[in-house]
Image (cartoon, rainbow, N blue to C red):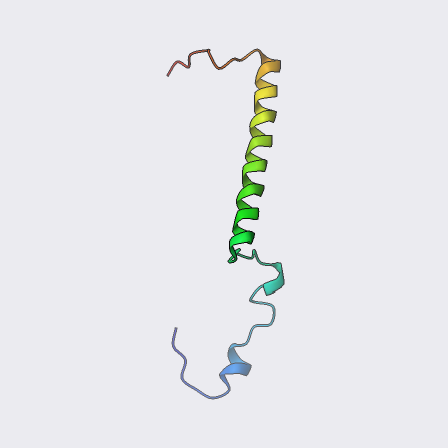
Length: 69
């Protein structure tokens, strides 16, 4: 979109249009921050896997069962 005119700030300014930067996800840039984020993701995946395996045991599903497609 192109606009040619005067007072573009007052005509095209929408308060609250852009989100507050403090509420956005921050990408880790330092090596120790990246390692901490990778460790957090691995921990979450391990917990989720453990929960799913426990639920499968409750339902009587084992890894040896073949899946028919």
